[in-house]
Image (cartoon, rainbow over the protein chains, first blue to last red):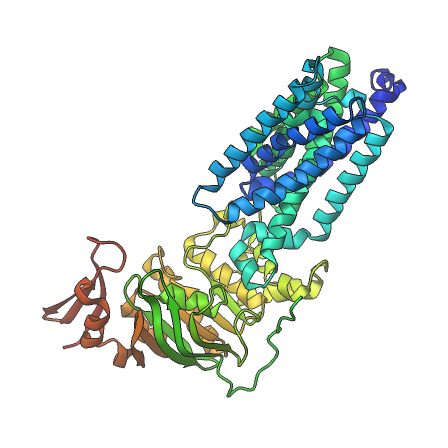
Length: 271
Length: 277
C-alpha cells in the first residue's frame, strides 16, 4: 500500500486530494440535475464565462490567488443571473444567446490575461486547473462551497427533482419554479468555481457531466443515479490525482480521463 | 409565501368549477369569448371542438397557468391558481420521460405539494400513493421504470399522481391523443368511475363518438360556446356544422349520417361520429 501513502507525505498533495474529492462530490450532485434538465451546454458556458472574472482578479491582485477565486465566484453568480434573464425574453433561441455570451466572455478573459506580461503559464493554470497549488485558504473555500452546494441540493431534493422531471406539474403544485430555475443556475455557477482549481475552466464541464452520465446509464432511480455519480466522481478525483503523481501528467486531465474511462466501461452495463 | 388552499372537504352543493363570461385574447381575435358554465362535484364534462377552438386555452386558464383577459373563474368558490384540488394533465406532457424513476416515484411526486418544503415524504404519503395506483389499476407496475410504459399506462400513472395529490378536479387536455382504441376506452371508463366517486372531470377530446357514452355533459366550442348540455343535445349536425364548418363532412349512408372531420391535420380525414337517421 506504500504507493497510496507515499504522495501523502506532501502537504500539497493532501490538499489537492481533499479539494478534488469535495469538488467531485459537488459536481456529481448538481450535475445530475444538469444533465436531466438538458442544461449541459449552459453549464459549459457558465464555466467559460468565469474567465474574465478570473482575469480581472489576476490583473488587479497579482500573486494573490485567493482574490482570483472570489472574483471567479462573483462572476459566476452574475453570469448565472444574466443567463437566467436571457432565457426569458428575446427572439434568439436560448442556446444561441448563451453561445454568443459565453464566447464573448471567454475572449474578454483571454484578452485581459494576455495584457499581463508572461501570462502564458498562468493562462494555462486557469484553463486547465492548478490543483497542486491549492493553499489552505483555498481548501477551506472549496470545502465550504462544496458542502453548501450539496446541503442545498439535499434540502430541496424532492422539489428540484420534481421541477426537473415535470416543470408544468410543479407549477400546478404552485411551487416557485422560476425561483428554483435561478437557484439551480446559481448552484451550477458555484459548483463550477469549486472545480476551477481541480480541472480548470476548459474541463469543468467534464466533472459536471461525465460522472452523472455514468450514473444515469447504470441506475434505475434518481437517488441511485446521484449516489453512483458521486461514487464515480470521487473515485475519478482520487485515481486521477494518483495517476498524475506517478505518470507525471496534468492532474486535471488525469481526473477527467479517469471519469471518461468509467463512463466508457459502464456503457455495456447500461440498464 | 401565499397560502395555498389544500382542498378541504367542500359543501356538496358548491360547484367545483364556475366560469362566467370568460375571455382570453389572442394576438388578433380572442381565443375564447363569452364562455360561461359550471361543473358540479362528481360531474364529467367533455370539451369538444375543432383545432384552435380554444380547448387547451380553457383548460390552462382553469389550471391557473394563463390569466384570463376578462371574466371570472372560480374553483370551489375561490380564485384559480391557489389550489391543490386541481390535477392537470397537459396535452403534450413536458415531463422528461427519460428521467430515472419508477411509476411509484412519479405518483409520490403528487404528495410533494401537500408535504411542504424541506419535509421528507412519510409512510402515510407512500400509502396514499399506493392507494392512488390501485385506483387506476397500476399497482402491478409500481416498480416499473416510467420510460417502459405504454401511452395508456402513462396517462393512468399521471391520473394516479393527481389522485395522490388529492385533487378533486381533474383537467385533462386530449388524454386520448395517440392511444389505440382499447386504451382510449380504458382511460375514459376510469375517468367515468372517478367522477362517480365524486371527482369533477373536465376533458378535451376529439373522439366525438365516445363522448355520449362516457360524459354527463358536453361543451362544444369554437372560440365561443356553440352548445352546452347533454351530449345527445350538443352533438347535432347543425351544431357540429357550426363548430367545424368546412372541416366537417356529413355523409348520408344506409346506416345513418356519417360525420367525417379533420381532427388533426389537413388531409387526414377521420371518422368520429355516427348518428342514426
